[in-house]
Length: 496
Image: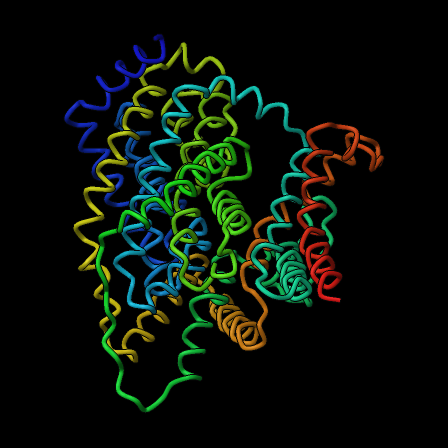
């Protein structure tokens, strides 16, 4: 009952005409930012900090949080239509979304993404409202050993994402981890995999690798397989879902929303890891798991529900502990401090207007996103009707602008070209791209958590199995890695 009264108080703030306008502006700008590969919510939020100086803290955070979850919502568009993920959290969406677009089901894929994002975002807001204080205590109980085990479990999702060859999947994952630790080791100052190049001292940005492996590799592959046949007109397809399709995606959306929310609660996890875990879980549970990566609608619904739910979950450590769960929420934390608000355990008592106003605005923002996106899908999807040379040129231009806009470095453009060629080779020889991206995301986080855990234990590796949570997660990870081997051994024994 108390939570309901608090939520009503939050709606009294969020429904203020000015705050309603800020919600709309935030989600609309976020959607556009998410659609354009390379921009991302972090840079957009950083630019908005000066704009929020003269706003009340509640209004400023309402605007900036709208940009955040709006960008995740809109990032699926370029992933589905161009295989060029707009934000890192929508990489997993491209695995089945882009094949659906090539099959003439772009409209349906975008509609599923919109519905799944709305449900995931709404469930996360409900969770944020009801159990934020409790979950903040759970998040505090996660130390470095538990985080290492969690990342290890996430990395074993490579098994689910490797369609045919476990070895190829593991090779791709190891390459991803190696890329993630390139540059100067911040603890020892040691240069790792820099090849005596000053440009490599800061490592390689995630966006350079993701756009190269997915978008640019797709451009090269289409050029390699180009023929003189006239281009067939792409069919956008209907936005309507049949009753069977709704039933098919209902459970994955529900499960992935819950998983994504709890993943977002853990500082350092976030929407990207949440989307991969959601995709991996559904591929394991699905009877038609072998069709994932070929245009399965559950492969679009699961990561989209998970990444939007993780956005809401990431506000739990931000608001209740003052701990940013990702780079984006770190910018939000900085904005709050600039506005004179200190997030933490006392925030619910000291600034309930900010806490409950933002939660209520998320309800409204998710409705705005659905109303904005669904009518625009037929028009957005017409990008597929562009002549193939023009479409390839657009993808190339978006990739180059996105990468160059990060650091204004021509070296990054050369690295984009290199990873485009790597992605092409991987595609031609059957190496899955998803494990590489997952290894890139988790590698540095795993190393940092492992080091901190060993420092705490004085170098004793037993710290990873002494704690029940880390032991359980590592056991699940080991089972996840060995299950395919056991299954194939049983099949060979039966056929013998």
